Image (cartoon, rainbow, N blue to C red; front, top):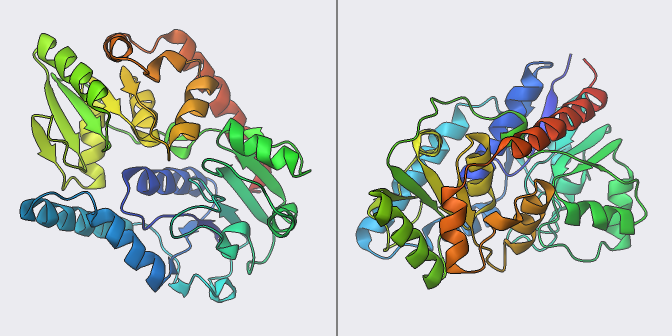
Length: 338
């Protein structure tokens, strides 16, 4: 029997992209043989590397980012991959019984290097095609050619409220809201509460950084920045590979982030967290917090940062996650025959 092929952004130098691909692959792999469809694009690879190296500030930062890039490459190569094929020639991909497209911003037409790639909308792949936890990012009009491609999917689901709204406005069936794969199938880890705060992201507003720093100092916690340099933190772990990212997220006392998957991993390991929205990530952070009743975690003022970092997530959040996990598993069970 041919495998299920998972099409996503698995080679991005981004902890969320790697872990969502791996977590979904592992969930599907417990039911069926599954592979990551290993697409290649020189233009996308060049843009990815340029982005991965953009936040550096010193020569040592460059070396640390290069170590991180190599760590991601090694981690991806350990996953079950199809034969490599050109992204602009999806008909050359390994033949699969079903193409599972998602998660991540797979339908984001404004993505800096993957936006508007027809393959991510199913073109060139034989049916059936299923979208799991797909996102349009910050949204935007869904023009008829893209709507027509999505109409050929056998099942659609969305990761966020904005994406569901766009699909409905395009006249497509209202999709289930399902969990990001990192919450559907959280990476297993030894969960602890050590005296440090993970800082995940970059470009934080000064007021947010000052509030998080003051909160940590009052408690004697160190601030550990993962993946990027943040000068206001105590320790830079720029070169962390995906496994170290998981370990640090699982063992910290709290998370301060402006990234979607910073919030997701805090939820997966039941960590108090405070997040702040940047323009690129505002929609998905807002939708995630609204979905789980966590609006207070999206800080708009210094006092809100301290409150969010201090407050446990609570039973209601776990109950909502359990309900969404059941919906997510039911969707996949229907969409992927054994």
